[in-house]
Image (spheres, helix red, strand yellow):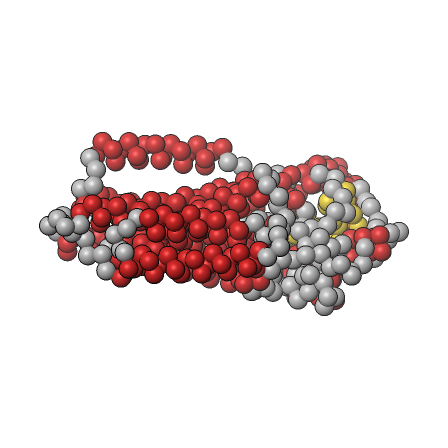
Length: 469
């Protein structure tokens, strides 16, 4: 293919990426945006393969069939609750691909040295190889640790050891030294693979201290890193569309990370190098809950709903675990049928990945215009007759406003406690990821409905049907 035709095709692909990202910003255009982005990637891949004549078409089709088959099986079999783990693996695969592509490019450059096809192994080449391998290795191993935590294969909490920050700083210094060696000896593979090993260790050590509460932020960071690794690989291969695509992913991931950090009143550095940690001097669960918690039944909640005019549901990870979203949809239809307005309050870090609750409710065909962001719905909580909290904890804990010594002090929360009546569906009074008791559970206007979220909502639906028809 002529260079001009290739560049035009890459330009079209890049435009489709940008238009696709724009479409993903709104649920009504998200599907179209996703398809446009996929079309752009297809164009980029086909043009690259035709231009470079890398492998035969038999291998290409075999790869397409195998990859499509794996993707289809994952899409069908993966439960919504496991989506964060799947996203973590996707990020990791992107990272490890960058490691091997950069390693292969370095091997090729060394192999062709002294021949008419000698690669110009200048400083840009060496630094691009370094960046691709360094970011890719951190992304891969960090993503595997995140997968292990989300899947429950490893300790979900913060894992720390004496001198952990010193070890990370020492590794970072070694990285700088190896980068210098790679520039001085650009065709040597040894410093590259040593760097990959060090970066792999660094990726593990950076993620293991991060607890479950920060996991949505970690997923966003790893997503951004996978894009940056791809962009660095684009410089290695002199591939324009890979640079553009990787930069878009990296930039969007960084923006999302900043949004998530703002929602938690934390900085990226605090997420990566700090920890929530329970407040040692804070009140105990007995002090907060003893004699103050009022339990209720699904039948009593149904009676409350019958007299309500506005109901707000606050979904959390507990709803995802119980797969209660379809039961919630049934309750939504029932109440709306009887003229009761029902909305959903979405906290930016609810669940275990960015947008987790939005995707979960979309799966149950909840109208998207009923999903309200925190800033939009908080001013109206005083007019809410019944707020139903399903499996959420820290994002509705009022101590974020009232206790400056709390681990979540200053974190923006959903002001559920301002509602006239609050119903919390939860299996027990166990704390959330922050490890602190929640005074909301013992508030005068709060009723605790203990049990599995799906079972409790099903019973509420049954009672409402019996009473209201």
